[in-house]
Length: 106
Image (cartoon, rainbow, N blue to C red; front, side, top):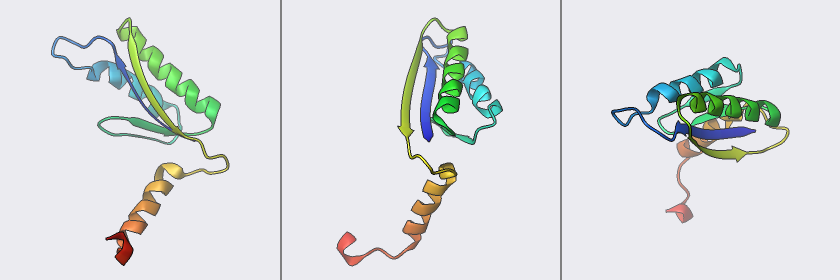
């Protein structure tokens, strides 16, 4: 499964930033050993249900160490029997973009 999630403290630092707390959460994801990717809005992690959710929980717990409240947004793509989809989905999209557009798609 793929899980894209964003976790942030309910209270920000004096400049309104949350990057220090979020860095602690992302560090936990990266140290998990599971395939992952972080962009400006979400971190996506790939693995089996229990292992992915354990990492999401640990990342959320890290945020709660910095703030008495956390906000968690989570989206999951659950596709049993598939692996390597962190890159596979993007590869298939890029392949489709390289193909000429069909006349009916215009």
